[in-house]
Length: 235
Ligand SMILES: Nc1ncnc2c1ncn2[C@@H]1O[C@H](COP(=O)(O)OP(=O)(O)O)[C@@H](O)[C@H]1O
Ligand SMILES: [Mg+2]
Image (cartoon, helix red, strand yellow):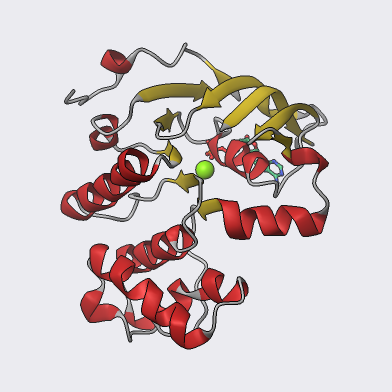
């Protein structure tokens, strides 16, 4: 489904020395697999997600999705890839002020040429599932941080993506809501064969992940099989 091959991305650093945000990362994710990515702040997790989402271009290496090299896509093809094949839950919510939760969550469906009415109808069950039933007609400014985060999750999942990237999706959620989001993601894997890459600091997430990788200074520091090394791992 997804293979990263020796992927690297540098940024210009403050003192002339470039920052190696992602430094030679290789890994694969299979359909139906939930991979958790741990790592301290600044270890390159978000940069890695942006490379997979074709929002950043790698300096070297490849992102292969379903047999296609993502870095070779045109801007237009990359936008379609993000719209139809990828669900990307960004680290910071990006909601339209003044639009209710239904419209905000239905945005991708509407961008995919599904009429507003139908898009709102389709998104409802997902909002319900994420505990936003009572909040469907609320605008972002009337929602809590955790509720906004869940609207973003509904939007990301709305187009039935094959690959879901979730950058700390439970960061603003209490443990009950985190559990709901994690079990939703893991049921997508099990029931629909979706591949999920989950960036998280949440030890609860380890119980849902099939594999855990740790990033440090842009490099993977383990072989991804050491689940026992994760604090609080319940499995
Ligand atoms: N647009 C950018 N310009 C310059 N440096 C960046 C940029 N984005 C990220 N970095 C740097 O790359 C490193 C990795 O950042 P990031 O991927 O955001 O890490 P994480 O998500 O694990 O906290 C950090 O040192 C960060 O300062
Ligand atoms: Mg980050």
